[in-house]
Length: 393
Image (cartoon, rainbow, N blue to C red; front, side, top):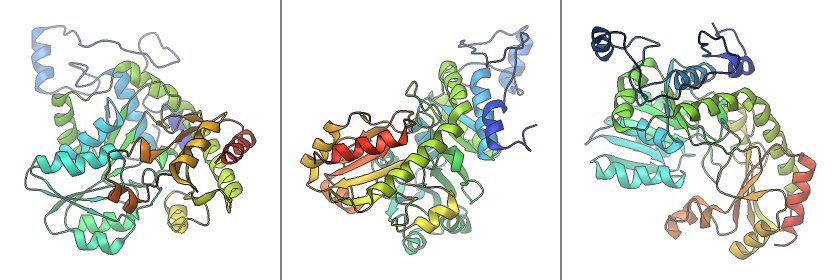
């Protein structure tokens, strides 16, 4: 039904199912189980549940199904499985697709928890992992082998905003039959073209731009029906990482305004980047949508927009960065992103604190780095707030 709709319409209407009461807002089915009319019906459903037939909330739920269908519609793929958090989505997508003895190639510029899975958990399970500079196509080509089973990367890395050439890396992976899994949270579903560019499985932390208002944890794994129902669903339903109905309802409400929020946030990020260019207190300005970003052309081709995230490296290291953070009046110091409120994060001391110092240096996560997730406040107010805070550096 929604194939001809544009994204903003899909965000409001796709996947909607109404009960006998014909409610306007999606219904929340807060139930852990479902009743069968007969014992024969229970038996049949456990053998093969048809669409809109449910067994247990860990396996599926009508409210969760609406969120899954809506996300699949806007991502341009066949199916999705909603998860309890973004990291449950990453873990589920990876663990469902690899076995002991497999080889995985990943970008080394990753969120700390993603890196933990590749560095610690997968090797513990007998999976060989090779990490590469995600920006370097020659490094990908050298690392991907005939027996490589899976390739994983963040389309835009956290927090230094490095960009992976999705089309080229996906093509290399597919040449050897590897599955391509991409964490697309910084690109957002609004600007995502990952499936079209060759990614097999896209994961999102719905906690970020999808909710966008700091209310709930959630995630989703998106891809073909074969991958989602054949590999992901069996793993997720037996290991317990399913999204709750209430969280799914929150995400559905968030999706209705996501396009409006993300476009406003991105416009503010671009405005702030222009204003900060050449600022004397900054050692680095990192914004994918700015001409100074070394991969700006690639970003334009892949997303058409620089997104909602911007990072700055304050001269003077940790002390200067902390003085800047403590002087903020509008932006909040926290570690979430994609929120309606502007959030500032010092990654070296928080989200990426566990990384050894040599890895931080390799990834460019310096003591003075501040990651900014732009909100929907007035852009002039935000620019003024950042500038007055930098005066304290």
